[in-house]
Image (cartoon, rainbow, N blue to C red; front, side, top):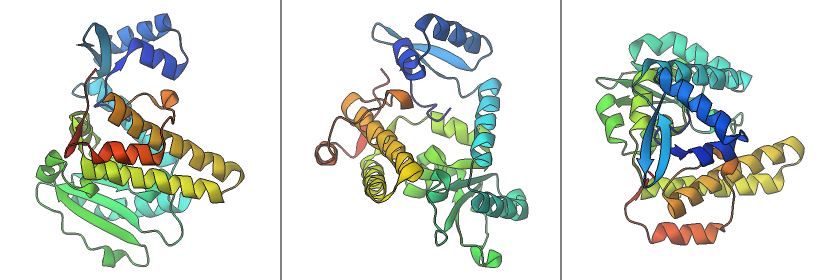
Length: 258
């Protein structure tokens, strides 16, 4: 549900989940039967991806977001739910994103919120002081273009309080990433590496996992043209190698679909 725009082979899913291919195939057939998964082909391989247009997929995506909301840090969750109760009916969609969505916020962090409507919702963060809300108002047309960092980060990695149906469909339609956004994600990975060096115990393990996922996704995208399941991601290349690879890429980095 995190990457409805990506397709995975039976082997990918089996390795990533640690479940045998036969059991994975049975589960995929069951999901296909209720319209949650569809099968495509990449060369000779069968590929599977979420069928974002079906009701069951949206229901599962909604449950996934409810879990993410429940797992937010208490102070962030309380603040976001308060703002949502105040302005939720003024927008078609309400998304928490940025450091708060990753659980990396500090007491001084802004709470980034994207609100979406057919026209830009007129909402002032100043009305909700002393909360440090940064409210980004967007239109659905801007989301369809997926052209700026706010839209990209909110749609791809945000925690959705409202509007999961249309947002999930837009996310599933992603076929490429702007080069500038890939560089932005590389900067994030570098920040995780620095935080990991300074952290201890559970915090160090947390940042290490964020680094593995972020850097692994960049490698998978840049060198394979795809995004592998989280458990299969591994770091084989240095930041310098990845940076060089990005520098030689075009203005957009495309998913291969295979």
